[in-house]
Length: 83
Image (cartoon, rainbow, N blue to C red; front, top):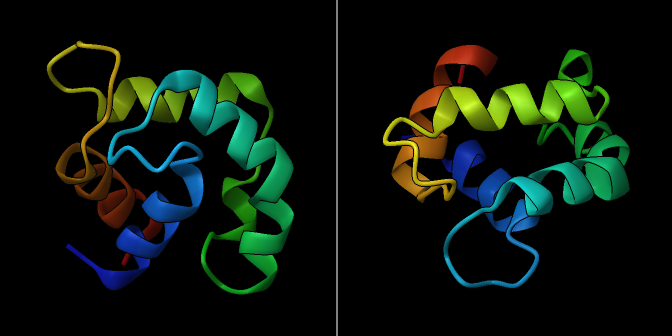
């Protein structure tokens, strides 16, 4: 799992509890996405609307518990973003 995935996960974890909810992902990407992309922490093409953010969440939530661990998150973003 990449350091970029760790950095992105921490940026999206708004309440710093070590897991991500759908609302956190959507809110954080809407609020911080352009800045994260400008700093190279998120591909520009990954910036999208709430539906795209929700789809990324669904792809990562392998066990369907509506919460993403770092391991679930990193497995998807490393593959999708080519890290």
